[in-house]
Image (cartoon, rainbow, N blue to C red; front, side, top):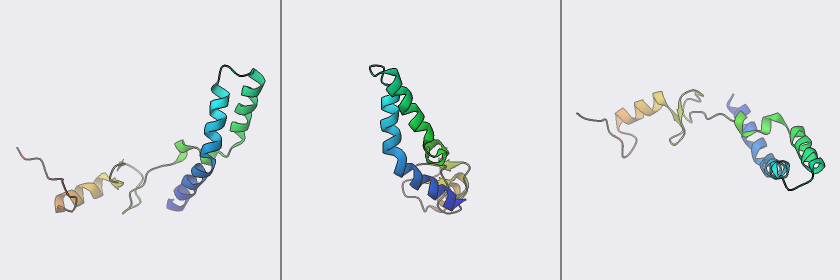
Length: 96
């Protein structure tokens, strides 16, 4: 699954500029309807795998796709383990 996610990220990077340009044309109310319709059709011809909504975050250590903290790129399980060991600087267990 990791290679599939990597391919999706690469595909998104390739088509991002074209997708944004077509989206800007398609949503511009000042342009003719035929041009806006054409932009929408061209956008629909782009690969579905190149959409940002298809990209998932994965834990860099375990490759787990669920419950990943995006700032640390770690799953909650790895984050908890590393925080309890003191391996993450600036974090400590809350004391009462």
